[in-house]
Length: 315
Image (cartoon, rainbow, N blue to C red; front, top):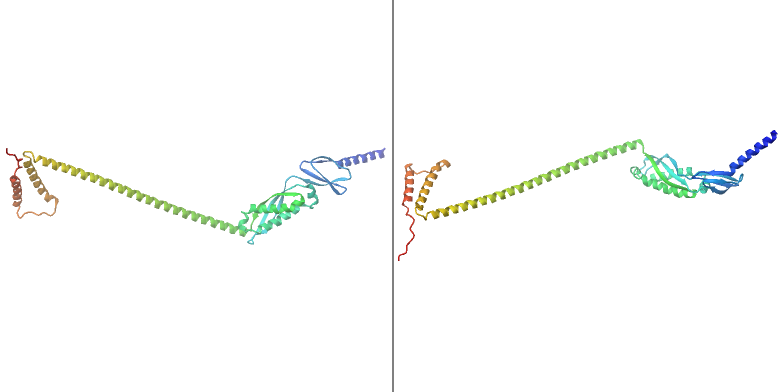
């Protein structure tokens, strides 16, 4: 009885193992490579599959998801002979599970080594100062070289990204000093340009001020000249009008005598003001001659003939 139970137990184990080797469930975004009697048979995609027990064997399992591989830091030498430490991240994806299984033993290790050698080659083509600004171009070149090499392996290299570029400490100190000097230089240049612009603006302002002042002065002189001309014209017009009125008044009876009296009054008034308005005064030999001169002037005015009467025609 115990022997029968043992046989049944062995048969149960055999059935379980057979079912495990026969039925296979492949997860999503995965691919299983099946060998039949040691030779490639087929690739199982996502889903449920039945295999021939003890004949078909799942030899390789691949993930079809995008995979990120860390590229360890390595020492690269730039074109100007400066050592820098560079590391990065490589992104790849398996497109053909069969070639990824039989094309190379370990495609991840191979791509990691190839990425390092290609990166050293690309860093050696440029100077240290350009390594930071040429990161995008370096990434593109590395991807192109790796993609060519990985095509027979059924692996697609999607992109490569440099994480860090670390120069030596002495080089970092020199770069910091250079950057500080460049910033100080830019500050001095900006200050001088500001002073120059301020001087130009100030000179331009003074120029405009002088121009405006000269234009205002010219306009003032023009206005004053026009005002003086109008005043002279008004005075001349008034004088002419006064003379005309005086001339008309001499034609009426008693007009000429009134004119003579006015001239005598003005003569006496101006002679009296002469001593007040001048430091130098010429007088006759005797003071009494002044009175005689005034009397003479009055006599001359008195002796002037009257205005002739208008001629009359005899019949």
